[in-house]
Length: 377
Image (cartoon, rainbow, N blue to C red; front, side, top):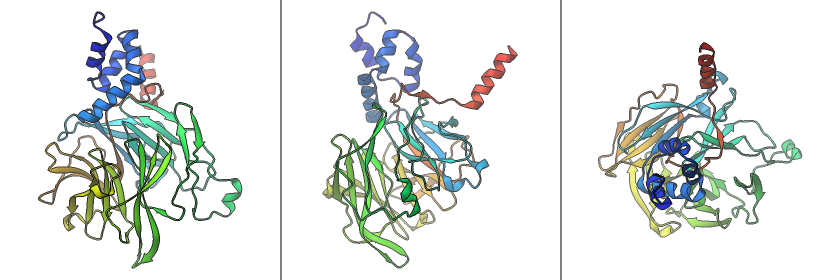
């Protein structure tokens, strides 16, 4: 293929899945340079997202599921699904932060990258150990530790009324305080973050009160644009005080707002980015599934009549296909998914070459096995 123009080779290669591209890195120097070029990586990622191909679910046991240090898992589990209605066998996946005595949690995920961190209950003057990880190519980058509290602050820790905001640059390998600061000084974050279209999003609550054994508040959407490093505040579809058991996810390339009540998960999509008037209800999970407190939507089926849910209970988690029109569930069975993962967090990854220049994730068990095989020879 050396006689073909670079443009033709690029059009061929960027259509391939990640595993094939990794093998082709050693074909020639020109292919190696092309595959590692930022423009090619971006082109390949956009195609992966646009075609919904090369997806993988990453399962990680949560902190509450680890009753002892011996229960802290060395491995996550990856499950590839070449089509939206079929799952391959679960495979052990060594995660880069394993240290034997601390649980590792999934903090967030986007563009094939998963952010994981050491879960600790201790008060510390430094941020927890954080890694950006590409599970599909098994590369990672550990972020620098950054001071978040002064030593004197540990003597009298007060509830947070103000926030100091810093961003981390992979290119510069450093943290930097931004000029535009968190606009909501007196608020409660009522969701995890959701990353979409170059911005981070949170649900935050104001005018908080405690009523009938639950926290109530006015919930709004807070967005931080990473390109211009500015905050913006948007209204949600609910303009009265609600229970602060809410969720924010990304589904079908759109922000997904989830309101929890005693009997329902009410789920809405923001059809147009950052347009409060575009919130549209897509389904309402009824009382037949209310034994599960939170049902996280992961993806639609190919015909969009079903949705894959991560259903969380106090003691365990399970995956189900939920049929929207008939309001019924169908359990998802994945071969080789360990029973020990009875309480887990899930990340959805697309095929991505981001972090191709990162560190290799080395599995000590595989390394030991290779050394043993060499000795036998």
